[in-house]
Length: 471
Image 1 (cartoon, rainbow, N blue to C red):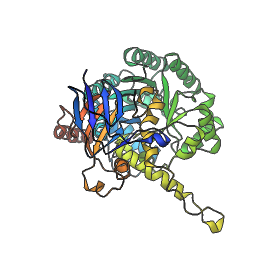
Image 2 (image 1 turned 120 degrees about the vertical axis):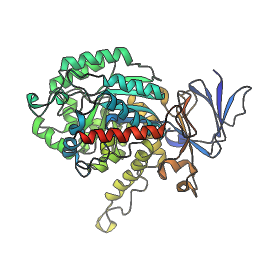
Image 3 (image 1 turned 180 degrees about the horizontal axis):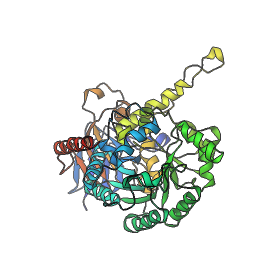
């Protein structure tokens, strides 16, 4: 395969820590699926050249928590002002049974396209749309759509083996699975799709919806053991709201994180979405075990859940990544808006905790709680770390060529003294000059080859009308 030379970059954010967070460039050479060189480079004979004048390079984003089927459930009036528990009943549970194979595929495609256009190259989708006797295979659809677009895809295969309602009263699409059926399907998915290599395009993860509610403690232990025997990582929701604390104390007499320790759900092969409500002991326990987080700031803000203590978690040793969560609780489910929110919200949290000097405090604080370099690291190499994709460890020689090239030609970026920070600090959606995944350019000049975006929009409007007509 011939090499590709990306020339004349204005700035390079690497996704690496400390002084390695930026590289002067201005050129990058891609050989096959790998970054071969970064520096001032001259074209080789016959080499393809991509002129990146006035562009900034970022690692392609790694989204570690999503619910793609919710891409057709944005802005539901019954759930728009609800906190987590009433929102679950108002929106995702209410519409769950209305998804057939066609609607599910369309929703997945919309969500993937939205992410891709923000510069995202890897998606971990926490898909929990499964039930006994289901007439279509949501796992198969997700892998097909990701392959069609050229994305790396991690299926976090959700399940629930119990419900807080009597099963006999539920429609088929709301009934829980049996543990044996779930484990059997996990074996099938692992054999068919799971590639454990560091540069994998396909992964499978054990992902019951939540440890507290989705299965009995002994079942959660069995799920963890079965996942580790198959070489799979573990993922779930935890401590999204104060309700988790109340439930854990009432059900098990401990904190949510302590409960997870008891059932074997902590470790370097585990990451949880949210982790908003934690005490100091829980933070220490998560850090000591190397358990990761998918930080979802926009959904946590939208549902009134709070702001996760990311700085304290990272200082304790917790691997930090970023996820957009489902579009039904985040009406802009893309990685540019998510990282912009992460940057702002950590600083706001720091400022909120400030106390005046006259009361024994340190005065103003918070503006350095999260730098743009931090956020780029969390959203790229941090995500690769929690997913076990070791070959996506930042923009450096020898790593996979997963690269987003942004052209900052919108007025929101005019006047920037430091263009490198533009995509995160200024927000919006910059013009995506190119998106490379494993060295293949899957976006070219802000367009996805073969995709009719206007037609996708028409299909989405028709699908929403169908959902509303049946509600």
